[in-house]
Length: 484
Image (tube, rainbow, N blue to C red; front, top):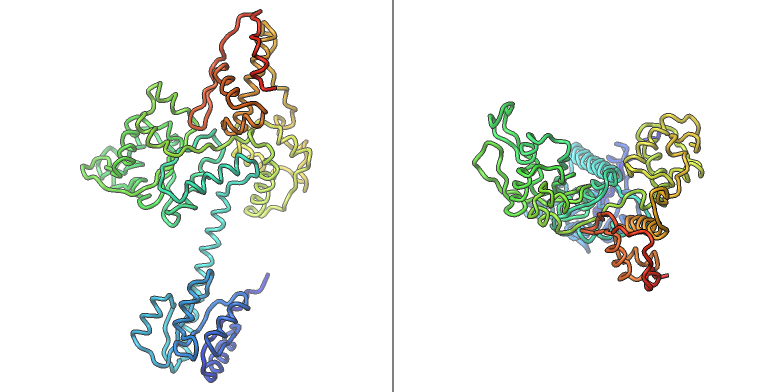
């Protein structure tokens, strides 16, 4: 086992006797001792020495005073805690040092036990702060968005633009594409990063409980309400609430969510009292909300309130180049968290995984990787170890010829499928898709209209293409529209 590193303490004091006295005390207690006789020299030691954990700093020194050194230190990132020492201790000096961020204030003559108690408390606080920082980094890593594909890089740029605002965001994407990760990234890079992030899965909560879950309830408000409950919106006050699968929310609850967005007001079930909340709302859906509006299942006014900034979370099928990177990340993370020996995936296994359709997207990929890590004994996971559906070679995605009457009809069906695949691969971005398939944007719009492909708010809806009578002749300019 690796021995614990000794804490490193720097003493900055112009009195040599004080430095000698503290050196004896600190080295006897097992600390690494560093010293400087002036403020300037102390700052130089801090610049040239890695890992100083604590500074004991005299207030009155020639040149830079202790308070000036403290003020300069606090401008730097990752500064150690500072304990101020003074031979002329005054309340004013102590208050000033505390305002500048000093951990403690000691008066001369220094007493051994008082000095050691202050040092232990400061180092304990530093240790706790580092532990919290490590836990935060682990949590951030757990919710990291990975990928080198242009769709992911574009998504990251959009997140970084949106995050420092309070704008409401609506995230579109299939189940398992990482919509929660997008929401957490927006929160983590935003103005409310230090505040609470509250997640609500609207599809997982029964309709009769969703209002109570979101807005809370009073004791006795309904059968089973044995005590008062704080709702998710109040829990998220000052922070962010993430409403996942909002398309599954009942119309009654939608009207109350709309009230929060418009007025910042919540009302507990069974209460007449209205409370104010300050919450940033991020919602997500795998449904076409415009279609839900047409069919009377979603409020149009709520849709417009939510759809201030739409984002698209791409499917894994749209970025197969990222699969080896994701496999490596999931396998390493699983090994670290479960004390498994690391395993590699062969090139053949990765190729087969990159060809697979992944209807469950990144979530399905993660589950498969973890299953293979548990069930495979060898250090390298081969293609033969993959579940059978992944080992099968995908068939060519061409229309079924049996039900097609004419060559023209077959060509139209193949072209429509091609356009749909390219649109999805490019996040339903018209300009990007047009560039990739080498056709003018105006022509692509004509093709979409021709094949009944509608694009709204970052997602696509394909309806049946206009039928053609067999034997219809091509128009003279139809080839020219293809852009070839």
